Image (tube, rainbow, N blue to C red; front, side):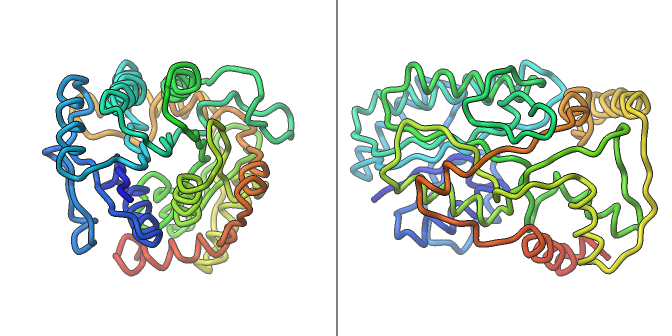
Length: 332
């Protein structure tokens, strides 16, 4: 069976490829001309160049794929952006490109068994008080990134003719991750940073559990459903830091920054990004998510419907991540 994975050269994509190979798929990694393929070198996979920005080019490329390889049996659409200096970019990449891919796949007249869309917890509204967010909860995303993912979800639910599963992961961490690395790095430097006056309720998932869950959902009989996919734990940002401290055997100084200070830092970070072209981890859109006190989601339906359990506790995932960071000399 052939599986096409977009975003395969990224942090999550590498693990998706590994788990798809474990399921004995013929794996085709969708790439761009400029994609860095080094993380996938040595794996028994094939590369397929797709131009997600052009519907007509995609139709030609995917129909050519079918002519050569015979079928597209499964698709995991993991490609997207989480940071940008221009809010319109989120819609372009996360929504428009998703629509292009779906319409191009539909044009091949293939009997695709499953289209899996990797969305985000940010497509939800934040939770109320200390209640876990339900997948069918009302409310709107707070960021442009979240809206772009939600718009893609709505298109899939209302207009996609392919059998689908939509998965919303919370913050993902693991070996090779750059987005969560600054948290580990600060603790390693004996610092803990908190924004605002309240602790933030959070969900997490270790990248190996996420990739495994995505692939298991792909091959399952479940279709036309949407789930959160976390490790099903309930945490706050202090507990996450405490686990990192324990694994690193560090003592730290806690620093609490008022929200207005973080806004000022984000403002100048965006100016720096526009001048240098180097994307910062912190921007105004990110603060819209950081200032919400509850991002704790309920993944019980996912594990019940797929008869699965996470393989890793939060502590085990953090320890493996730290071991990798040290091995690669990210942490010293």
